[in-house]
Image (cartoon, rainbow, N blue to C red; front, side, top):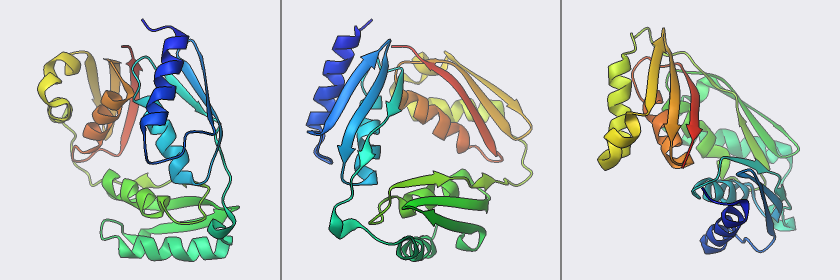
Length: 220
């Protein structure tokens, strides 16, 4: 087990190593494996990237992301401009059924609502607006109305094992997959947030899944 100080040092090193954002104004505090990120960055993607980098460090149990976004003057836009750009981005993405998606913007924060048929469409909608200039955050409130397909727990487990590739058996045997209707529930343990994300993504990719309840615990 890592000490909080070791985790803090590792997170700081990981943030400094990542070239996609400036980590010099990001602070790191750790208590009982829970990492708090503070300070400020220039864009929403930078904030998200810092969180993702910290989650990839072994020993991190959870993240409290308190990083603020200080947009430079040339990046600021009105909510109307952001909303227009968001709709253009959604219509330009072939994975997004833009006629089923609605956008609202308040103080630079985009909220996405509506219904789509598949999880990949929900994810694609969020990514389409994630990197727009002037965005301070994204709330993805899309719901999934998957077609009436019976979900197979064995197929979900198979997809999870494929996601874990060479270490499939080691990780997958610690994951319990329960299926009720179109809802998949994942329970058990995985070593890092990366494996948790891969397991959840694999569950979403199974035909007919409209909801995934991820109760996996991070245990290095």
